[in-house]
Image 1: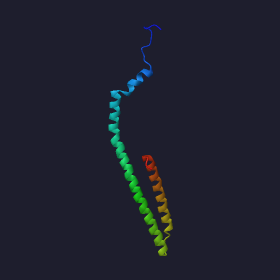
Image 2: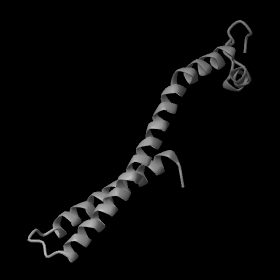
Image 3: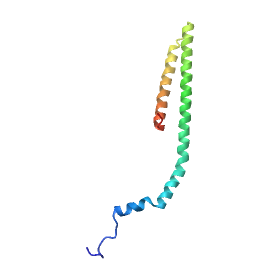
Image 4: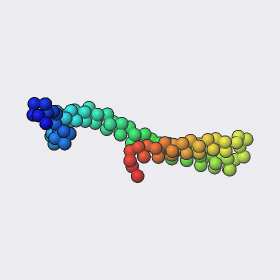
Length: 109
């Protein structure tokens, strides 16, 4: 091949060494991280707060459900509280499902 007609393009292998030590790329990556990190940290904290709130709600629902059962058994109430108790149990189940999803999203075992 004639040197005047040969390609001046370099192969991909020749460029891979330059890619790892590119100050522009490093600056861009640092800039993106400085922009995204506060948002990700805030989202992570809100997920944690939501999980704690859901656990507290779940405990309160369990307590309320037990109270309703006790009232039903102790008094011959004209109201059928079992229906409401079942609704509370269903709500508790939904909260547990959402809590599990949040745990999986955060990578918590």
